[in-house]
Length: 152
Image (cartoon, rainbow, N blue to C red):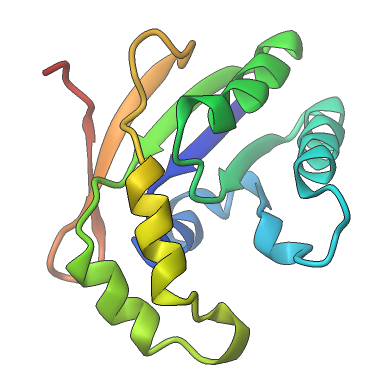
């Protein structure tokens, strides 16, 4: 089993990446799917655990900006014997703000929210327990380039 943790700003392409690359094999867990839940973190963890209990791969499609946000996911995945992979979408504040501006209704995030996430956003470090870490960028043709995240 595998848990893919998508890490990046709102409108950075994480959900598009999920649909293009992971949707055929991974169950999507996103706090966007339950915005009114009382404890979104607990619900997310429960959904991840349910998928793993069913033997399914999981993609956690949230901003996951800081190590403390990712730690419970990594710990839960390892407790189930799953491989945990980080997909890092490096910050490009201009691109996400432009893509966010054309979003409709509730999918649009207030600019202050994007900037608050940017302030907390950290690349996944080698000490966080990920079994693999990748960097994801747009390829300029509607797809993605995925490369191993190097140190430094």
